[in-house]
Image (cartoon, rainbow, N blue to C red; front, side):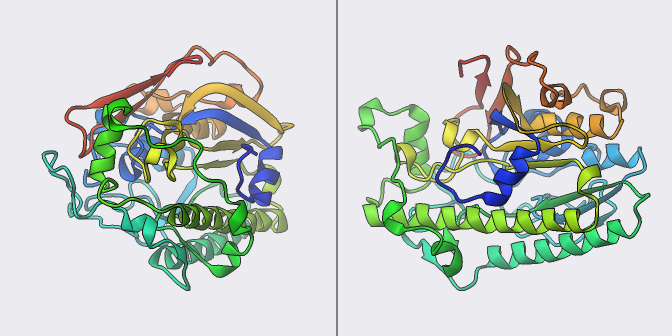
Length: 375
């Protein structure tokens, strides 16, 4: 539905039922800070979400807290990357434990050029087909528990619910199962459209990220680049299948017509564009994210070119649930409801959206503004 090479029949079918946002951005191209801002409706710097080792403080309300005020049963299945002792943050239940550290093991030293816990070139050179990985185990558990939870919700149709089904794929490591690898012809996998510029012509942050990820230490062969991109697309197909399984349960249980659905991601991946991999950059490949919203009772099959970001998810869900988040929030929210945009309003085009990078690898806080056609 975004015109890319990935095979996503279930996501495409979902997009035909709702609104596709063509210019949606994460507020921090890194897992934990991005998720914290999405859950709180606040920019990462306002809640101390500076890196993957930062705590999500228990005093900061999340989407789950707001929806509970309207009587919703709130359940989390899968990755949320909470750091700190509170692993619920307003959810009534959590069905799958975190995949990554919940303590402060990943707290960085900003003076370090490279951290051992960060990605390096082996993330690309070791890519390919794999029988099993920890990420596959996590997503299979998430799918199983989320599916079971939907059946439980169907048994009590009077109980409004919010289920966050959060998968780690298609995140690196770039390993995929053989069956998903086989959905693509290896020779047809597109190579990066933008090459690495000579050092004198590079953006300062591009040079920093090449050093940060150890990508200057090893020249990546074309075969390794194509293989990593192939495996990533395989994992997109895997994720699409999981989306399809959950959508089928909604259909089979008769809940599809009364359930709002939001599909998005906490960040993208450079995948070799500009010679870069992984994340932590404001280039479109990892700062721009998919965002699909399906609302009951609307015609769907629409596309919005308004600039939006993940802090808009909380006000949107609250709007759909009849909750005035602005009145309940202890701080002014940074996001706004996208329900009008889903209904065809074009009033958001001049509104700026923001993103931040304050984690390791930058010498000072770095910021992005997208407004109109400029970034």
